[in-house]
Length: 346
Image (tube, rainbow, N blue to C red; front, top):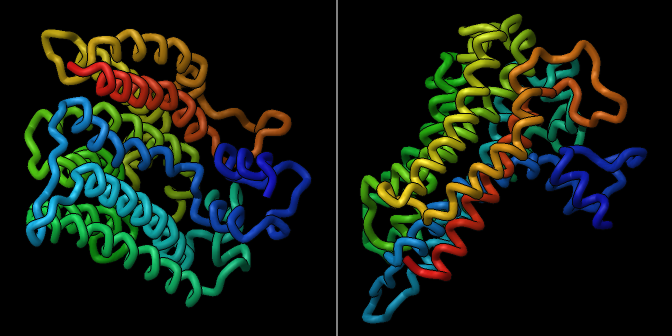
């Protein structure tokens, strides 16, 4: 697979212009079908706990069978487990929504990118097997960290994440249909993921480590708001009462803009020396990121156009792409700030 294919799949959630996705390599198709373009949300959501543990100087080894096991290794095990679980959950949501009659031609999910079943890429049975394999791998990694740490709280984090993620579309919970999907995303991509990797790397978790995950949780929730904004008519007509459907399009645009703005403000506040949650230089990085994010934030705040601009790849999605672009500089600020802060020391 060429680098052009990678870039297109991971940034545009589509094959390069003029290329039939079915002719791409197995790896390219797998990335496309699992919606790997959104994995950066989980990479930082889960990775921020490990980064924060590094910056805080609290990574500690575990003792198992008389041998020391690296806290970094355990943190990475939790990190990879979370990302595998996210990929499995993406596919599980596709399976459920297809069998609920949603993900069919005319519904955004089936129109902007190949759907595993609707596109003919997989049978329903093959998709279930794939979901099972990814979930099993995630469980093995999670179980490994829990056994080595001897910390039942890791299991509680994993179970809570499983309930909230799978309950997003699956009965009996169906959080998305009850207007609770956005809240569940905030909890999973913030305290549960970040707190889980922090706990795996350090052997303990505290309120500050959980609070540190909240700004990024706001961005992930904003991206989900953007996605639900793009599907508001389709969801409303099919009885899918997301929070966005319940509050209406105009309020949802305002809410999404506020979430992103609050995320940048939160990062900057956490970096104030008197607060000291993040290194001080994360604040100017967040300020610079906010400036870079302004054009995308203006798109988030404005009504969706009647038709896509020429060459736009994600239609009928619109606000979700802008929310993702508005959030990307925040990812850079957190990654660079925490890594450099850890290298330089407190």
